[in-house]
Length: 108
Image (cartoon, rainbow, N blue to C red; front, side):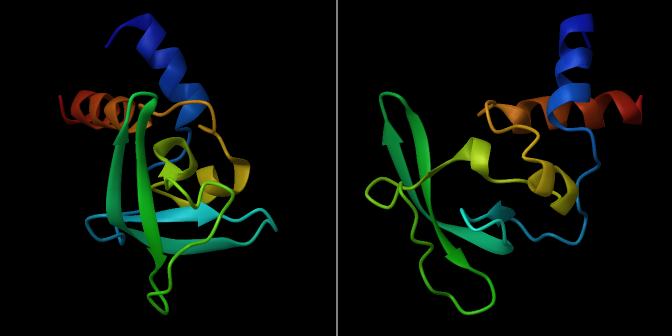
């Protein structure tokens, strides 16, 4: 891991992954500040980046946001509740790559 990657990991993903999440499940904070467990139901690849259609895990209803027309960017989906509450990687769409680097380094 490079020094730059280390600093980005410390800034963008300060808390460990929630191991109870299933594949494709994430935490999402609505505009009203409430945090929900959601799962990805659609993928929308765009020139500007990939967005994801999501549904609430508790009832299966579609998540409606200001991005409704093209889904939610990855930077608004989190793999733990603490980072979601703090919105730690709101400006980082590639946080999952950083998480993989972080977890790989810890295994060595």
